[in-house]
Image (cartoon, rainbow, N blue to C red; front, side, top):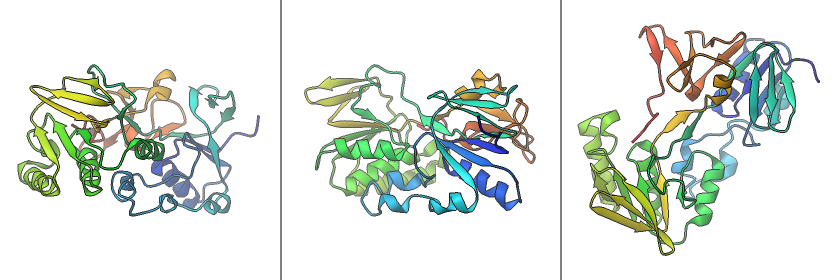
Length: 298
């Protein structure tokens, strides 16, 4: 086993990269590693549902840094999935059995899409969009001008619906919200978003919860009350939940499903911090822990 990492970051997203950069910018010494599930440089996610989905940018534009940045800052990028954290031994175990020791660790495991607890939600033709691999699979399954049903009227759902409509796909967006993003932005902004979507030609079915998803021939039928939508692909954009399983198994204190942390991002585990979507940290101004607002995004 190699010498312990001065900082072992679990999570290969923007938060993990920012942590490594901040550590080096603060003259942090010793070996640093980022453990990344996706086997690629940390990258921007917002373009996935917009410019990249519409074909207006290339995948090569997504990374937040060139690979040379790693060598320049003496940061290892370790491809693998962390399956165990031993806070006593200061050790993280990867799925292949490799063990990494650390002096300090940061959990930046992010969040993952949640699927509605309804029949048919786990059908492989029901897609979610969180990663570049998700986008590639969605594009592989899409047929030219094929009808698509989007479930959820939060930011991601609206962006996906607008992007696919601009590519010529008939799109129906279904949500239990009375207007797109109304619970996050209020009535006035929601009405403007509704107008933009309608101008693009997105069909809206709002104020109705989805009951089930059934196979219908070669496609899927989404049943929402008395309304049914038939399409080849269904995209579920119904929010995300923190990926806190690693911390939970190690005995970390949770706040809901998020890792509880103080104002300095320290968790209840010794020498383990948390940041990003997986973390609910104390906000000094608010005097309480704050959660990521898009958990459970409708």
